[in-house]
Image (cartoon, rainbow, N blue to C red; front, side, top):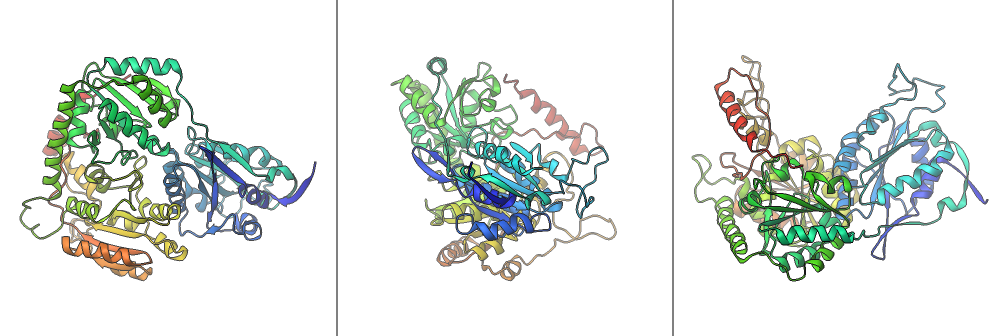
Length: 626
């Protein structure tokens, strides 16, 4: 057997350069580069290997935070519909544990990312080394074990030859859409630099085929019977529709059957909101139309969704006593949820085959009229929300968040993408953003991770350089992780940051008060010396000055005219921009459903007692759907 002598780290680099995934006859590079921050746990190993062997096939990108680089990688993967990602390397200790939040974000969202954290010495001679966690029950435990529950595949390479088995398995998981998530291979720093005689064929090009799984005939038969006997069906489109490139199949299915479609956060854009049978967002952050139809649906058809509590409104959304569930999902884990009749298949093929089986079947005319009436009523409510005729005293002349969303929506086109993740914006955007295509709306709401937005926007821009990409975020998320602005400038990936300033964590502040609580710990206020609480004046922060110091071109928007001018100005720039948008808090977006957040059972606060009574009444509407 012909061999090639390389270090473990060099072997990893050479291997990753030749990994591809193929779907529908098109090949895509699986690992498109390496992101990392170096320390003693990887600089002389993987760092040296990347410098010596990476070259143009595995470019190195220098992030400013380990968590952020994972967000960038998974946003890239999402924009590529799971057909490619990045590797992420860290040193031992804090660099590795900084990966945990990003890994959870990837795995919960079913998106691929390769994590290569450094690890403590396998030979144990210098133990304990700098940044080593000493566990008194096992010398084999390191902080990297924290990554086990948030990884789809996890391994530690203690001998070079273990790589021959571990790396191909890691690639299999990364390329399989029914398994995708974070993949972690821990690399002890001494093992990284060990040499081994590797089989030459180990480094040959490998192509992992993504074969679209076809529905079983018996599954289609049962599904067809459920639909044909249903009087009030509703289809809920999740992220799997977009990852599978099933948008056209979904539109044809809805056009033929007139079954209305509601969308999850990940499925937003699967149908344009202008499409007659698109009812928009469903669930806790849903529209009036979608939630009204969902309430009485007797059949819920979930396509590519995992039915999170926001989609089901904490199991209160579907109130028809006879409601049944039918799902199309590549993952059997998701397909069987809610006691559903499953079709374990690719979303696109599942919709196409189910549509063929149904032939010319169409919902009753009476239900069709009800769908249209609900949609028309929602459109009226929509305009009342995004273009308020009157505002509370003190808010006149100021922008509110719903107006900001409308203005941005009107100024952008199909070649733009908004990226968001946490706070009040995802809920308001899910309800109010009028998508034109599946690429104009990028939501990380599986983990709703603060700090994702700027790093994620850069990942989207890397995947689609021709698009104008906007990080839509609040001041809380900006303060948590704004440093990837520097990386975007360093790499020449222009993004535009839409910074909505509401002086704190106002989404949770509103939730706190809706649960009967007093205002506490959610606004950015100075400490009151007498009360020893954060109840003093608001902290004034110069976000424009901060952004300028990082090299950003800045704009300030305080009304519709200046916001439109800022958006136009940012489009003309070639480097990263920030538009600062202070908003008034007095006029929020109404909700059309419920979310289960338990209220204290015992309290001396009368408002909490009242909220508890309301909570106890609300939970009586929860359904056991299995």
